[in-house]
Length: 331
Image (cartoon, rainbow, N blue to C red; front, side, top):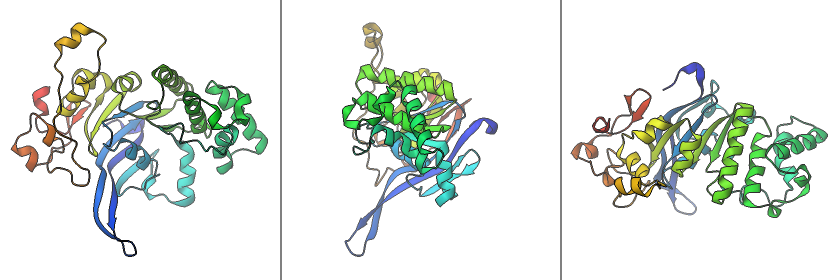
């Protein structure tokens, strides 16, 4: 998907199933939630890779599994030449310095019993990369870097607004000077007026420190603004991947077309002319996903082959991948 010398992370056939068990004393597995079901993609150095899809499609699980917060059921995650899936204990802990995460909920992701200084400084202490005095200096620098007063270090999270808390989360993620950050819907819990400030902060930090982002979101307009390439997820799999502009201007998967048709346009004339695609039915259960193409139960173009055969993941156009039997129709 990309030249190997420019790839920071290579995800291959990543699978994460959560077992469903029955019984109290003797637990027996009776099924599994197919949260992530065999996805592959590359993330290039210095880029922002967008991951979009509706709620429950497996975006956040993908981000957490890549960082080994969830251990994958199968597959590989090669980061900077090292397969993270094979690492354990101290070796994995050392690699965590290069990878960090900004969580979705700024109210739940900060420990209410710790001061801001303790929260931001904790990674430095855990990884033993700074003395106590150096930690205090580093915390002050990080707070200033994200636009907060260094004097706030002795305050507690409840004293801050949602936007300020998310800035604290960004500062914590930057503490160990990582090269890769998973941004798990970092603006979805914030007011619209604050969202732009946080996104601008992330962009400025990326330029300053040459960061690589995996940006997870369901706000398609924001993903188009910040991302270089975008992958679209549906029910645990990636159905389309392409450069940002090409994906938004020329979607070749019916699900992507439906998603993009729902984006509001600030032009009433243009909005009246376009065709809105309304998806019928509900998203199938990830416990028992449909056979063949997973989107076939809601797709207006579905035919018999869609139920019988899983569509191949293929490069339909240069750099533009899709998993659809009929994607050539939309080229």
